[in-house]
Image (cartoon, rainbow, N blue to C red; front, side):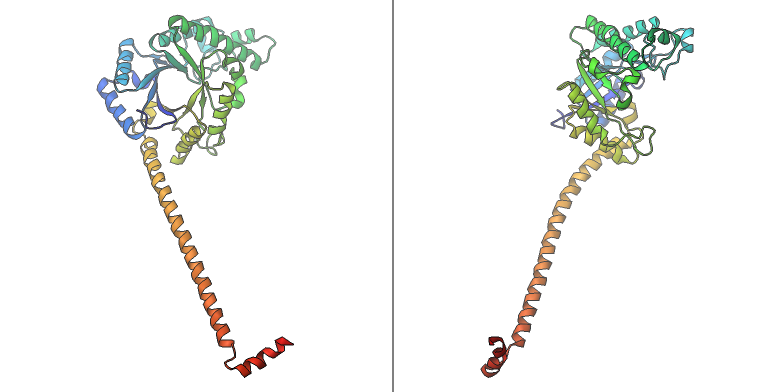
Length: 351
């Protein structure tokens, strides 16, 4: 049962993290996550960067998670190595696809079908974009701007190479697209929520703001909230959740604020990326302690604040009381002591 009422804690499991885990190791690591962060659901990735988890290993992972009451969905990162010698000449970014190349398009369909075969829901990591400027892309682009070309291309890829092949293998599958945190460059890299919201079943929001002044993106901290609300308005009721990571999160409060703001934005899921980076990581271990400590501290602060208010009021009352007594004593000592003196004393005021 989830430890939170309004959202689920989800862990993202990359293929390199999970491919060599034994059942005993998986159970031990899952116990650690249960203790510190909780684990209501996992996004289990069978493929990333040329690493493919064999079916036997994948089925073991699914079985163990489900035996512990953890909901299991799939994931897919659309990156690949050079498939042919000619691909070395392509101008790609960190393994992202050239979606105009036939070999890469066929390879993408293969990984999509493998994922859809094992899961009724899977999410695309935010490396779905393209920045390729190879000769094939330039020829396909024609006279269009790069923004128009890439948004049209990625919409076509989303429908024909991802969603349709996935549903052909598994008609019940739901496909989720996760949008990155750099919303200012969506169209330049091919993302277009106005088109893709009608292609995918759900969308997802990246809320990794990290260390604002010291990171290369300089993302404002409040973006973890505002981008979530923006994406919810793109696809009302179909924004599946938020996703953040521990990278560049020093001091610890940065990691916690990503989670707090994502939760305040009413995200249905808080996805923590990723299993290998978070296991035995101090940001997870200390975040729970900090949350508990902050709860105790807030209660203590409330009590202390009330005590201080009472003390201030008491001191104020004492000052007023002392002043009134002093004034009364002054007036009493200043009054005449005989009727004759009193009459003489008061006579000027009567005139």
